[in-house]
Length: 477
Image (cartoon, rainbow, N blue to C red; front, side):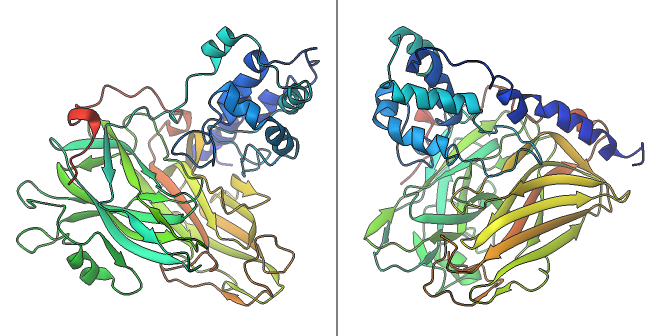
């Protein structure tokens, strides 16, 4: 390893950053369990740290675990899924690489939960609960400064077929500002498979009413300029506004990435719209509907270091061998991309569909050093996180990022959608159904600066935001 390379300090910093990770949490496993385990003293802190990020309103879990009564009602289930290692879901292998916000229970925590349930789920001191377990986490983002909704409810017939929709979420704010984060909140988490969104900023005076136009379009029937025209996205004089592609995306289990102030973020015009150029609803066996929205979090100033992105795999870089699976076949595929400049990686996002079983990403530097990125030994389509490193991760120009994905197209795969299994061919179409297959990897980064390897990516308390509209909600019609 060359001592002048920014990668040279990475491994030491990763070790330092891991001190609070799995090994740090497991260091107390040998401590004897108390004679009596209570919710107030022992269980509430475990639930608050590891379960509430998902088990609260507007998040991925199907029920809340906010109060003692919430947890008591689900006590036996909680014991079962934690003993089995099914919950809390943290797909990334913590023996390979570490990230912020890891939710991996220590064996002692699992034993405490089991003993608490076996002893009758004792509540303990309510006053202690009030001090330690009643504050519902907000994911670190706080209360949104504005909420922007899709104009209308989308009906989803129960005909068991995928739907691909193009729509927009227009807004009118008090003035131009900046964003530190955007959160897409599905109105129907069981139905929404994924969303790819762009941001449209209208120049001052260019668009009188961004709410004009159709609410929803069938992406399989109309696309491109025709779709944008139906949505009336153009300026009032017929020209087209500036568009920020891939400003916000969503996959099951994904939460918005958070970075320290000054890193990432976007400029936001007073008039604009989020263009959902692919909103995918999975098959439903009953009639249902969706009304999704965006939470906006303002920043006091422009980002000092704009976020950039690398794309690997389906629709972006060649996959070898070509992504094709015979019925019953288990196979591993590979894709790679050379980094063309010195960069500092902030976060990464692996992506496969139902047949994926294992995911591996690593980088090989020009000095032939291997930098571990992420390994998922048991892929679960329902939990597709954006993983943020504890510190910026520098990669030199000439580094090659490698991605390997293993797929199981046999009847033994519990996620197999077809009986009997059928041949699966990868496609570069943006209208990929749940039962189509993909192998993708997204790398979010900033241009490298000397000393980046020492910069912690733990979110800092945000500066006071610019004043939002009355009530903190964007104007809607």
